[in-house]
Image (cartoon, rainbow, N blue to C red):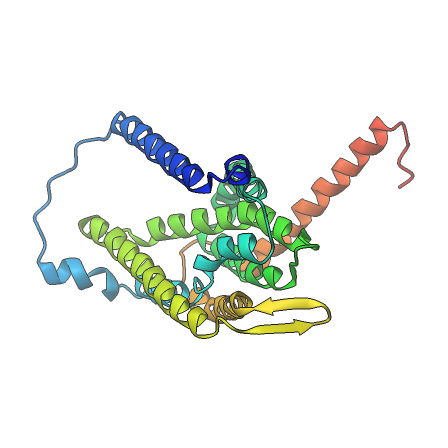
Length: 290
């Protein structure tokens, strides 16, 4: 993209990128068709009212649904603007944007196993709560980024891989744990998809309107320029933390307390860091005096 943009062919670059995305999407679809799937068991068709409202009669699933609805309505307010802010205000090149995305993707693959084991050990709920709390920090990082100080963006890229992987994996497993009625299995996931998709859609419409209304906003504090997008980042960060009490109301049988999980994971991280320090010292030929 940067190569074509420098030569006046930016539109061609977008066309090429979208064409490649379509081709890879078609390849993914063909590969997915080869995935074996067992024959579904035919069950009596429930009434439409049962399909639509049956899962919401279960307290834990209803609490999770309320959390998801409010979180996606408010916590995703800034989602349409991250890429625009990178290119327009922080002056990232297309190459740097690609590197930012790759950081999250690669780290996400590496942390899939870690969070999977954490879920097996502590349960889905504490892992989900922990990661959604950390997700709340991420929009605030963007407030301190400038064209000359990009460290917050790279930290956000790392957190994208670590935290969003844990949040997505934990949430999906929590949904599986709560969707324990075989007769309503499809309804659980249908409601989940509708609530999250519709919430993000409405949030994007509202955010776009608000950002347009405050498009002329510009504030300079301690040499840092703040634009209309920063207002959306601030609102999204506050909203994410405000939604956490709703997630804490969800209960999962057999899961460990959140504080216990945080303490155990912190101890594990410190142990790994200490072990890594000893390995490094040995490699350098320095004896540990502890």
